[in-house]
Image (cartoon, rainbow, N blue to C red; front, top):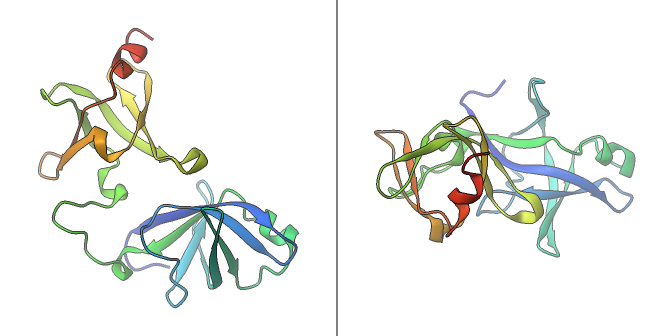
Length: 175
């Protein structure tokens, strides 16, 4: 089992070709590490160890091959799995950076300090980062996690400050 908390690097999508390659939504700024232990997990199942054999880019996505995955059917069986890495293998984030894992559960606040809700999880449809915020009125807000809308993080208060696009909070008001 891993030594430290696992960090979600990417999500496996559909197979590419016939020889076991699989497309990935990649959430990291660096390439897929081929020389360190990786883990695969799906839903509530315990993670299992996996070894990446190769990785390449194609049309804005990463394509990877994993040990023991040699055909399209085996790659298809991995669809939806999360690719994880032991946090100890990652560099410490810069002073003004955080790993998404550290922000989950944080208060989401507007520039004036009012609370929108709690950051529940991240989704990446079509490569776009969307934060799912559970609002204080019991709803769910889809927030475009683009740098122009994220003002900063306050680790001591476990809060993220955002300036939503014009009209976004009104769309979700009263739902």
